[in-house]
Picture 1 (tube, each protein chain N blue to C red):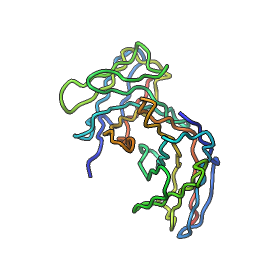
Picture 2: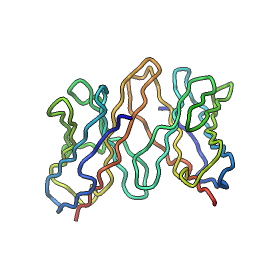
Picture 3: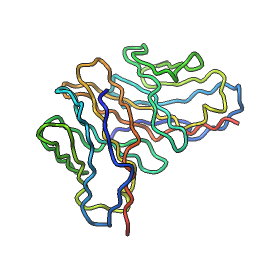
Picture 4: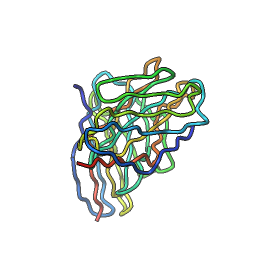
Length: 115
Length: 112
């Protein structure tokens, strides 16, 4: 069964460093998403991406964050200058819109620890 | 997105059916009801979705009230692997937004 894959599974970085989290969405999907989950808290929406541009973003997704689809298969989330509060599990997801709505498929997550 | 209300936690014995309720009294006519679950240390996993009629798949059944103000996810025989947080999410097909908004869900504990 097709799946969303994410790398790395775990990354430790120093505060202020740049981090890039990578994702390979399901191949025929057109919408891409990043969510995050701080330990013990809810899954939070960050951003959605369609047709090579951001379609929606949350208040969390400030100027420190950016997304890119550099080629036909990868989808990346960049955090320019990490803060301690960016420590969380980051989930990539993708979906294919149909007339019955969309079902979003999530990856296993990238656990980011900022020290 | 319309709001959903779920119990914080539920317990079930292994191999017994589990009925996980969700209230969504402000649902609109074009909102689909989606259920996801999140196993420990994993990403959310699609379980089932429906609009008006009850739905069955290999994982679960979804029973939707006639007025659509509530729904119930049914796991026919709970196993230890079904211990997870279950999320009920409404998805509009007309709002132009495709994101899901997760609530706190129901934490299901399965007792051996």
